[in-house]
Amino acid sequence: MAIKGNKVNPTKFDKSQIGFYVWLLPLAVLMGAPIVYIVCHAFKPMDELFAFPPKFFVTNPSGINFTNLFQQAAGSTVPFSRYVFNSLVVTAAVLILSVLISTMAAFALSKMRFRLKGAMMEINNLALMFVATAVVIPRYLTISFTGILDTWLAHILPLIAMPVCLFLIKQFMDQVPDSLLEAAQLEGANAFTIYLKIILPMVKPAIATGCILTFQQVWNNTETSNLFVSTESMRTLAFYMNTLSGVGSVQGQGIAAAAALIMFVPNLLLFIISQSAVMNTMAHSGLK
Amino acid sequence: MATKEIQQSKQEIATTPKKPNRREKIPHENRHRITKRKMREWMYGYIFLAPWIIGVMIFFVVSMFKSLYWSFYNVEVFNGVNTYPLAHWYDNYVSVFTLETDLPTTLGSFTISLILQLPIIIAFSLIIAMLLNSKIRCRSLFRMIFFLPVIIATGPVMSMLTAQGVGTVPMMSDGSLSSLLGGLPAFLSEPITELFNSLILILWNSGIQILIFLSGLQKVSTTMYEASKIDGANGWETFWKITLPIVKPIILLNSVYTVVALATSGDNEIIELIYAATYTTPWTKGYEYGMAFNWIYTAIIAVILVFVFLLLKEKSDKNVKYEKRLVRLR
Image 1 (tube, rainbow over the protein chains, first blue to last red):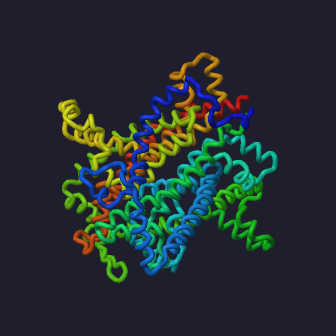
Image 2: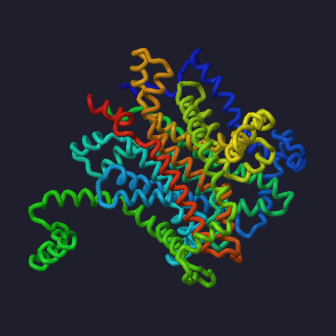
Image 3: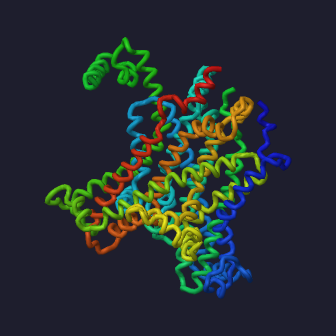
């Protein structure tokens, strides 16, 4: 039916909406607290950062933390932009590759018949449960064996396989009706066409969710910079921000607050972008 | 059976040299068509799965088997990794329980708090997702507010916030709650008090679950709600008869995600124990001890997940395939 006319936001305020607001507004205040806090904290001058009892809101906002942060950054041997560039390249590469690989694998695991399918799913489930920090040494050995230590690949490859992402997308694909795929097959579509034209558009909400999850993990990841990379100019922004906040106990606190806000903003932007992708694919299962 | 086929096909290759690639895969002439089709079908599966398999094999399976292998040996990490055999193959696993004397209580309280947190997170995120899925103004803004705390929750900011006591519910944290729980045994009342103390933290951490529910709710056709409304169903009935059955597979997905996220998050005390055992050099208990500990922990999470699966799995197309069947009948 008229999907185009199915507007996301209602145009008029209706009396029936009040009930929702009664629930949503207090909860939103509760949930919004950390966001407000992280912004306020970054703009607090020194005396307010260390005030006791600690304050939630900022009274005299100042940019001193940011000035300190950039001064510190200007003094380091590797330019700040290099870290940003590294982070952007790594995050973009992981995001694209991991979505591509996860959706392809999920399509195969969800809709195709082949030998060892169950075993593959079990491997993924095991990967899901396994605590990643415990395999750091074997993983380091693998990476040094493949010879990608100290390159961008050392940042990218270990993070591509996101078991949670695959599990999420696969679970959503299970709900795509088989009859739709059959219909497409009758029309002469091969597996790749079905993947591109039917599967991908239909699991768009799951993909967007997976993207947000992956981005969050990769963008904030300090482990790969810590372990697999020894050249300073190959490390990522998250790692640099972490080292900055460790510098000097008093100034470090303010710098850490500013750094937290800077690291947070890209998450916000990505969420806003992908959010519209999730929410505009309004309810239509593809079958009428 | 399989080896016979291979032998046969090898003979065939030897006798009929034309098109050897094809012949290798097709042992019986009479099953020619089916096998070929099957092969094609399987081939697509493998093609789509190939990049994932390669990545997982190299970066995950190899490391995992190494850690499993090491957990049965006496390991020395010095200029590479050297392994020496133990008196018994299970010695590391035994020493986990003998050296970590308070392990059973820690594990017990962890499991109980997990079981308590899971329904709260699921119920809360489902309610929020349904509220956010309804037609109201500023939906995108609300969605953002409810999702974003999870990003901050992973960072160092959260520890500052909790230090200020923001995470507790003020009315519940004091005497009233402890007097209410007075009758319960300690192993139950402690996790419950803990739960109330970190209630807001739990809610802040449920952003991903809300998002997963939301993307699941997007698929529920509005026509179904309209139809039920015309038939005279009220909101309560609509929820139980339409929303819940459709969302049920997502509840399973979300529960699995929640268990995994809670169990493997860095600020979990058992993970801290494992981390300390594995990476505090010089190793007092040995690197292999950490490996064994980790495998025990993985097994426990697996058991919890199996329970979750059994509890929430789809019961033979009675409820869940409802939508699917509806569509097919038309």
